Length: 191
Image 1 (cartoon, rainbow, N blue to C red):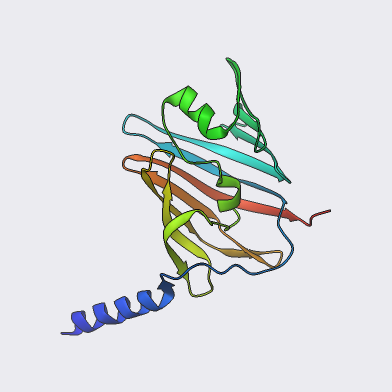
Image 2 (cartoon, rainbow, N blue to C red):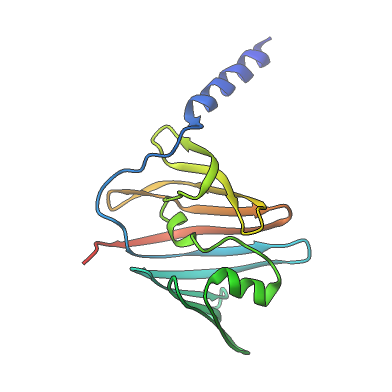
């Protein structure tokens, strides 16, 4: 009997903390200039890869470096909404979007074109959204260009310079997932 009561209490507590209402974001100055350091992992049915990541966002321009624990750069990605370049040891490739280049390199359709917005907690392209009691996005479904649903999750929100910023991101479809764990945020005010 006590186990049932404890279970009901936990269930009531969790449903009070997570609601299925549209997210409401704290208004304020737009966040267009930021940077973070952290870890990036990708898992497929065939392999698992983990690297460190540094992401710098200035307006629409992004510069991303993926590197080993020893500081050796493995991949650089830079671009904006119109043009993206991926540089690796064996050369570079340029395309109209990150999704297009991921497809060319891996044959995976991964819906990452809005990743820069998701990273700062602004998710406006998801369905079946769950938010916490403060209105922060917790999870939702993202549709890729073929209509397949991906589960997007943000978590570990912490206050950084007066803003609540997520410190984890996970995007998953079946046995393919991408994960980011953010160690350190740096936010700059828009000029």
